[in-house]
Image 1 (spheres, one colour):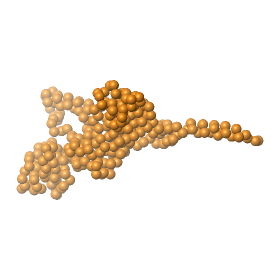
Image 2 (image 1 turned 90 degrees about the vertical axis):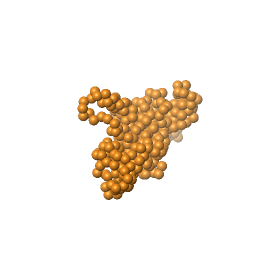
Image 3 (image 1 turned 45 degrees about the horizontal axis):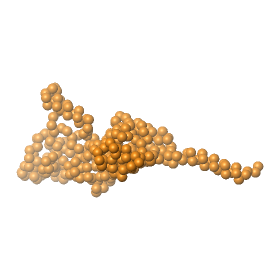
Image 4 (image 1 turned 180 degrees about the vertical axis):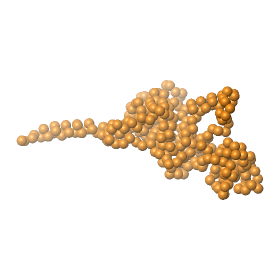
Amino acid sequence: MKISRTSVRNCVALLLAFGGATLGPAGAYGADAPPPQIPTCDKKIGTLAVTEPQNQWWTALNLDSPAALIKVFVSQSKCFTLVDRGKGLQAAQAERALAASGEERVGSNIGKGQMKAADYVLVPDIANQNRNSGGTNIGGVLGGLLPHGIGAIVGGVSLKSKTADVVLTLTDVRSTEQVALEQGHSKKTDLGWMGGGGGGFFGGFAAGGASSYANTEIGQVVTMAYLDAYIKLVGDLKNGAPDAKADNVQQAVTMSKPGKLYTESNLKSKVVRDLDPGMMLYPTGEKMGVWWKVTDELGNEGWVVSTNFQLSR
């Protein structure tokens, strides 16, 4: 049977049409591809508090605070010990107020000197981009809702192109050194893995108070952008990059019995100060037998006998 050139062209067109239908986001990245992985750590890097940025850009998208999203990453990665400086702290302060007023029973063991200090503060924000006067990005949308100038710094999420550019800033609490600043980027086509049932990746977000990031396409894009930045952040810290290494990498210790801080590693040296049970100290890494060199919250430095303290929990 003789096939005309016209028939051949039509067949090729049909093949291209059906083939192109599979080359959307799911086809380009593979519908069967596994979902992205949150990085994990074998040991804790430090204690972390996650703080909201001042500009509440997420409200215009009906999203939860990005702090809730980052807390899910941190919890699943096991790279940091989380301390709550939000609603959990408010509830704890209410309990402490009850204890101080004498309302709680004897032995409740709530008082000063027990709150764990944060080694780092992590702030999740979106990248600084020029405002889009056409209203296709969040900067344009919020221009009339936020104080002057704020709209220009929240333009990192584009509603039109479904892209997000975000920033994670990690600061050492004691030195105030900015030890890491990582940018993350994501776009709609990066969500191709969800076509193969990978949407289960978002299953644990509801319990962490970040379910809104799973319910909308732009929320999913923002999630992937933050994950991109978090992967880079953890990678830098685990690899010990010079600009991502805090001054307080040693785990804090707590005095379990009364003791003294000495200028040298012997009992005959000058006493810097008395140390009460419950007081938290920060090892420098120097050791001489049972003696550890430490600093206290006031910046005093000296030596203490290690049998008088235990690792802080």
